[in-house]
Amino acid sequence: MNWGLFALCVSALLVAAWIWLVARRRWAWPGLIASIGCLLVAGFNSAAPFRGAIDPDYVGFGFGLLQADKGIGVTLLAGPLLVFGAASALIAVSREEGPALWLVAAFSAALLVILGVPTLETVLADPDGNKIQFGEYLTIPGLAATAINLLLLVVPFVVGLVWAPRAAMRGQ
Image (cartoon, rainbow, N blue to C red; front, top):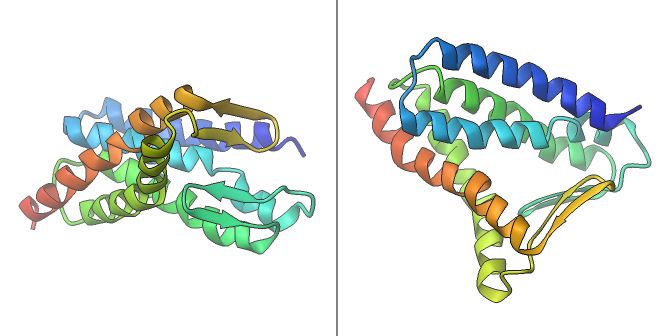
């Protein structure tokens, strides 16, 4: 099976739903920013839960602090990232307030730990030491990976963690 194509199809469905919700214009700017980070996490992890469960040759899984060898461990780590990432992205871009935004706040907090801590530790130790790896076919090394991680996978969760709890409380 072509897992890259599988991930692209799943991601395309998520992006289509996200665009439809963006077009409805019921979002706040911080929610839009947070939703982009959540959407990326869901997209990055769209094939791993399935591949981990059925592909015995999968190389394993690494996403920030989360690491798993081959098999069901990959599914148990990547599956919630896909599900909660997709749900948080769609919730954050579909409302300006309300209790559902607590999920966005919790996911943002979790991702700040899972991705933010190792990214910042590496930046402090060696700014050129980060890397982004998509399976065994694509690796983005060094400062480019650091910039991408900070901009796309840390900043949106800082915004989400600041915005979502306040917006959730406003809607209660």
